Amino acid sequence: MNNLSMKEFCILLFIMLVSCNSSKIYTIQDYNESKYQEVLLDKLIESPELYEGNKIELIGKFHFTIETSSISKGGSMYGGIWIDFINNKKLVDENGNDLKKLGNRGDLSGHKIKIRGEFTSKKRGHLASYKGSLKDIVYFEVIN
Image 1 (cartoon, one colour):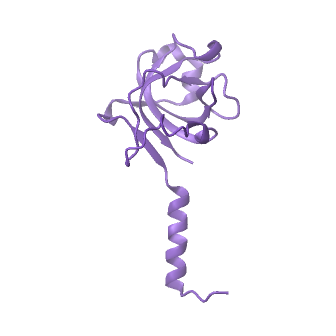
Image 2: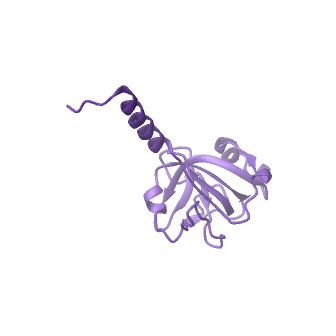
Image 3: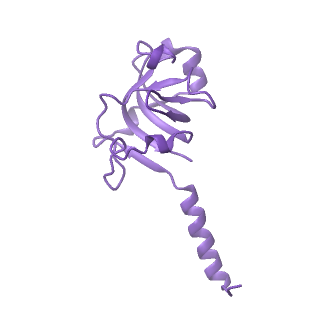
């Protein structure tokens, strides 16, 4: 076994902890976070009409397949909120990597995310399987 000093061990442990807990954030170029209201996913699903046209922030589990893009409380991708990336501005990370071009949305499926955009209950996603849609996405953070 390698003989590490306590200082070297602590530095290695710190690096490992920081790299495991780091989040990945994608935003639009002219992003302004002050306009978005935190909404519990349960409350939005219960009463979507109360949030029509509001700029909101949601936290939940991200689901992405060829035909599905949604956020939910847990296991099922259906019954949550559709995420409408179709006409969205480019979302980039600090290195300029585009969320859409990376093709990594599928790799992010199943992760907990924080997302900000405008809610509408009028568009209900693929096969109208959702309580509404989040459009004009300005912020997408992978929490874990």
